[in-house]
Image (cartoon, rainbow, N blue to C red; front, side, top):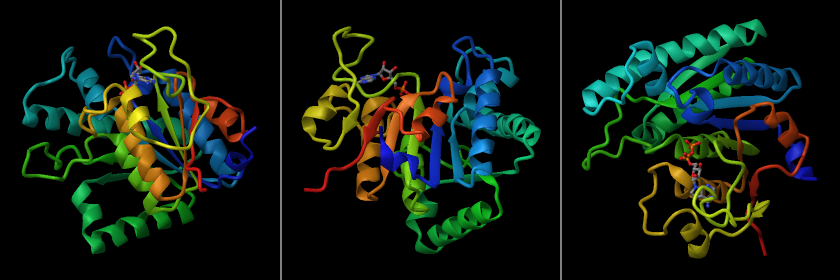
Length: 268
Ligand code: ADP
């Protein structure tokens, strides 16, 4: 029983494309419906909820009947622009079933690096939470570019969700992925890999288990989840990595059930 998790009042939830889009490219309506239901119910329980959602490119590809991911940056950004609007449309439809107001927040890293912009983002998020809405956050793909000279890109929404958690001093970050938790090795390659229930120290040894300590951060995958967890440690908050196949798992996690991997720094 994870007693401290049951007390979490302000919660950030991050969903990846794998939760929102089927491998065949179609939209996973069941998952999105469940997400809207669960998050609206958490609001009704009096909790404050922020959703960090990927999926803009995937939804845009679906909308434009494109089977393969575009290769040029303008094409990717155009597809993201189409997909982001459509994704919000789908979320709004589902959340409105539960009479739950949402709001869209699109950010780039430099927004957070400039003190005044940072304050503005925090104020907006605080106001939206005070108004009872569920802010839905994503990176502003049409502005952020992935070039060497630019640092405007978060790299991935794992980092973004950890940054948002820190900004609003949330009690808990739940990262939903396509895997049950963090394992001692990639379970798709190593059937003997064991899942960690709790991680309280992130060292090089653990980084290596994430698929290579040498891999650059911010490229998705497990090293990016660990990098997000490090930010959570810095913020003295808590993160759970769990399987998003069935988003009602969020209820179980908040009931303190020992599912997924809990990341909480040990203070000695
Ligand atoms: P998401 O798209 O949800 O952000 P990713 O696909 O980037 O997630 O990362 C999840 C994948 O990382 C898993 O499906 C798994 O194959 C792989 N992986 C590599 N190393 C590990 C590990 N140590 N524990 C768990 N999963 C791992």
